[in-house]
Image (cartoon, rainbow, N blue to C red; front, side, top):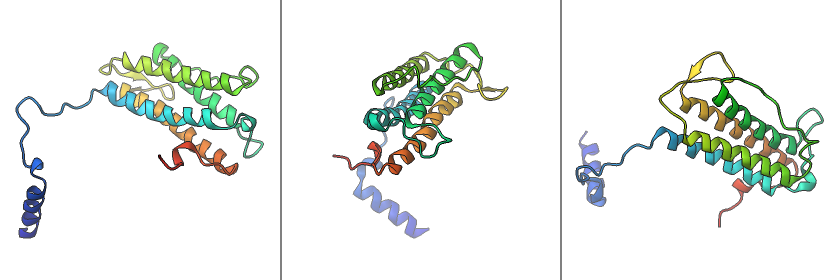
Length: 181
């Protein structure tokens, strides 16, 4: 016990700011739920959008095996998932439908669709009432808006992980794994 007290005293001597009590009324306020959710949403989206923009268009139809989605279809699925979460949040109804590769023929079209889906959901998150439960699009239950939108961000993150595999199969390094300047 004496050792712990001595260590604490040494830490406070080395870092006196830790011992200071903040002036009244200046304590950090916790982030609002919408801000926390939006930060998670934007971080997941940033990684997927970076991949969609970075991946060579010539490899957009690459599939690791014939049974799975191509890189382009993965990005279209993410955009479709974003639209699904937004539509379900607005209507309470679940309608899954991935945008068609036949409709979105170019990398530019696919990236634009993904960015629009991300922006549309972010705008809705900003105006969401986080005190009112929402219906889950995947189960007949109600959930907090925070859990709902974390699920949506999680969907993007799951596909980010799959897209990393597409990069590695093509002997490429994903943008997030590259050395930072």
